[in-house]
Image 1 (tube, rainbow, N blue to C red):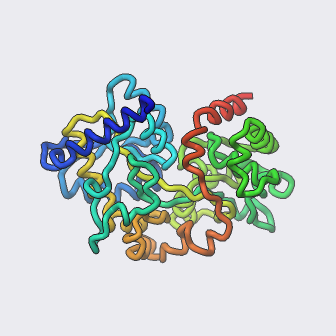
Image 2 (cartoon, rainbow, N blue to C red):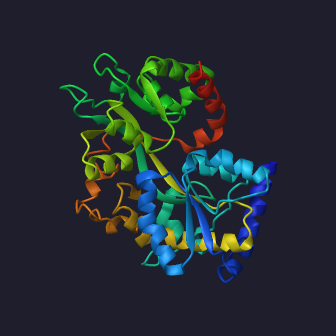
Image 3 (cartoon, rainbow, N blue to C red):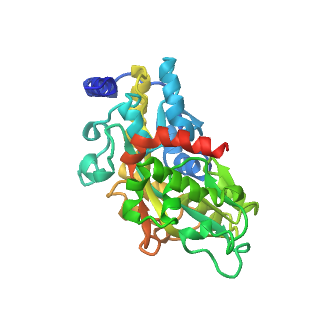
Length: 369
């Protein structure tokens, strides 16, 4: 057994051993929660943070560093100084953090709330429990928004329109990382959807993806924060750009910007919480108490009142109704709506957990050329 696996098992055993004791022990009076900022963090504040603070009186400190969560948690662990209590990460990052022993293992049947009808959390979350350390919150997609007033008479409706500078001249925004960009590039370079990850495993396939991205590199503004593309679209600095569907919902429906969605080849993903390994008993108890509250059936349904992400619990889906402020039905704005999900791309968590560091290094070297 590898060192990281040994550490992971040890952490899991310790967590299960102290779990019932922590539930009744003294808890910290503040909580540092790390997330993505913008419309997403606002939805969490309204659905989770404010109700929890009202219930407990604790202070929640928000940190918008989720995009750097893996690197920062590695550094904190190296320095033996863990300053975060609950961290919002995508599933692939949760798998990496779990494998490295940097995230606490969660027993869903004792550490997460059952559904109102008694269904266990394990059954309610089902196959979205992709890691022993990961507590799913939402199903979301990364897709494209475009300026309706800048793309001409024919709106883009195919992912490969992103690579068509002749039909759609102008700046695009793409995330400053290989994930999704490499997959879209291969799709638009003739690779069949079913073969994308098989091709991307090879150095030749990685070079092929980068070469395709190179055809538009000079027309790309690279983004790092989820709020970047919505702002670039609002300012008219790009004619189209990738971001999370909930950010585009806020831009279109709440801000009434001249922007529309292009759902083709949207990439489904899941996002959720991890609790860092190595917290003091008091901080771990507080983090577990927050997680129990924030991932129950009603709370996950409540988040869908503020942003168009699907709740990760099966029992939450029937409770999704109208937007809390706009009064519009939220179901048609979900990435899982049949009209939006006609051609989706399924993200491979295990692939990116295994290959992320190596392909990241190659991608950043390519960017700097």
